[in-house]
Image (cartoon, rainbow, N blue to C red):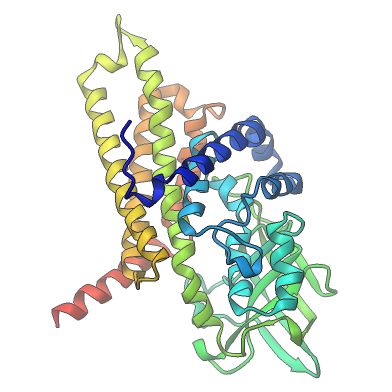
Length: 386
């Protein structure tokens, strides 16, 4: 194979990273996926093992204990899914990538030492709590209140759909410290062993079952003012700055899941014999394979290009929205076709494509639904037309 030296995804160091993640996934992840799906979570030991291999630090600044950039994180996601993981596994194991970046970016040494470094070391699990019952994607509608009382904030409210909420040691929580709208929102780190904080219930989901999801309750929770991330009233700006990264994470999961589904289909169509001939000899199956491969290639090429531009510091929020939608739609198409090609076996829980089918459905919802992404895109398109 000829390697394109100009491709930032194919440097010597990153090929070595691929091999490292592939071996880790085949050893530590794939044999345990069925158990974790049944348990509804992954163990802290997995985080520690990943940290020991240097996998949790990817995409974080060196000053906070990190290494590499978002291309390295994308490669981690590709290989985790490509060797037997899943979007749910990525959500559970990489929960720190949504819980801790804001803390790292704010740069407070004590917060980094207490929360970011332990998360990158696999010693603490973090969550990000934005969504509330009734608010959905309307961040400006957040009502969880944080009232200053001396050197503490008193927090009251509730959050829902919180990834890793049942396992979290700390929750980076969007709270209202000021008036209505975006300008009244702040970020506050809440330790989950603080009196008044509780997990309302674990939410049972269609897919991503190994990634625990919860409702959280805050009942007069006293949080030190030192746990304020950045300045009061800056939460929305901080969230928007990091949201592109979260959406790219999901976009990478989209094409990686689709590729994994295709990889599972290919030996099946060669081996499965119907009416005296392998499925691979049927034109209808061959054309399905062709379309699946085409859409995956288009999605991967586009998403990787946007990731590289994001790493270079370009303003790519609209392209990120396009990339997320493209990859999510590709994933939905490919996993649907994969289940169809497997037939009855594709509908059986023991088949990996069944898991990918269920997990992939979240990608067009999480991190901003397809419809929200289309609003971002259409605003740009229409503004150019005026």
